Length: 332
Image: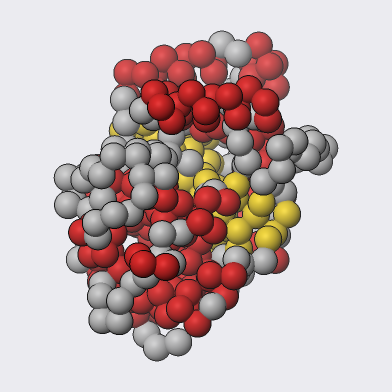
C-alpha cells in the first residue's frame, strides 16, 4: 500500500434504503459505527446493531437516534440491539434465531466485527481466535441468515447483499515457505496447532480464508439471489491498534498518523461494496472501491488446492451446526 492513500469519493447521490433492513456486526465503534450512521442517513428503515456488549450497544443506539443528521433525514427508523459474541458459535446461532423471530426480511448483512490479536489465543470453540472471529463465525452467520436473504430477494426482485470487512493483509499469508500446508494436513487444524506462525500474520491468514470462501462460493452459487463480496478500507484511524503490544502499537499508530483515513471514509468504501457495486463483485475482493484480481497465491495451484480444502472443511464444520443447502455439499 502506498504511503499516501488515494482519495475516496463519496457515495453516489440518490441512494435510498427506505423499507430495507440491515444488520451491522461490530457496530458499536470504529468502522461499524460509521457504517451504521451512514445507513441511517441513507434512510434504512430497520437497523440491527449486533454487539458483544449489549449495554454499550444501547448507548450507541441512543447516540444514533439523537444524531441531528439522523433525526432530520430518518426520524422513524427502527434501531435494535441484539447480542452477538463472534468468539462462540452458540451466540451466532442465538443471534440468527433472535433476528428471524423479530424480522422477516434482510436486505443487507454487513459482517464487520473483527479482531487482530497477535498472541496465540483460542476461542471457546477451540479454534484460533482470529480464525474464529474473522472467518468461521462470519461463515456461520452468512449461512444461518441465507434463507432469509434469499426470501427477501424473491420478494423484492433484486439480490440481497452480504459484505465482509476484509483486508489486503490476506495477500501476506503465512501459508508460504516453511509454513506451507503439508499434503494431507487439515487447514483449520493447521491454524489451530501450527507453531511459528508470525504474530502479524494471524490476522492476514484469517482474512485469506474469508476471501477464499467467497471465491469458492461464487463458483457454486450465482449472484441472482444474494451477492457476496469483501472489501479492504485501507488504513483507518480506529482503536483497533489499542490491543496491540506497546512495541507494535507505537509504529502502527505512527503509520496511522501519517496516512490513516477517517472511519467515515471507511464507511463510504464499505457501503460501496454493500449497496453500489453489482454482480461483478460477487465473490470478489474490493481494494477500496474497485474489484481487485486475486493475488498470486490464490491463483496458484497450491492456492486453488487450499480453496477447495477450505470449502470442504467449512462445510463439515458448519454442517454440524446448521442444515446446509444441497448446493454447498454437492460436487463442483
